[in-house]
Image 1 (spheres, rainbow, N blue to C red):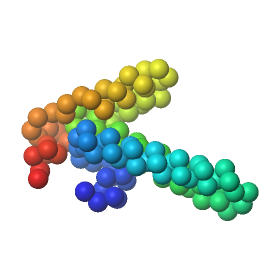
Image 2 (image 1 turned 30 degrees about the horizontal axis):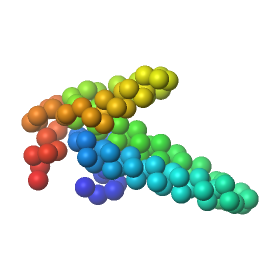
Image 3 (image 1 turned 135 degrees about the vertical axis):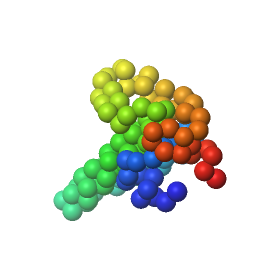
Length: 114
């Protein structure tokens, strides 16, 4: 799966392993950007950091929606992530719940497409 399709589209399904590693990658990029921005006084770096931050938010929402699609749920379920405390448990559900076996309304089973 290429980077654009994994992080910047909202269609298709994503099983647990790429969801975990995708979020891990986003977390590492976020931490790196935060360290660079904290050690810089440049306004340009701040603007670049804001642009990267917006891209990271879009990528994170994309992963959540595709993971929900694997669980045969619509993307609007992602709004649950805006509720404090509930978001933690819902995040665990997204991380550990087994996706739908076989095809569902959102596409082919990602485990069977190899």
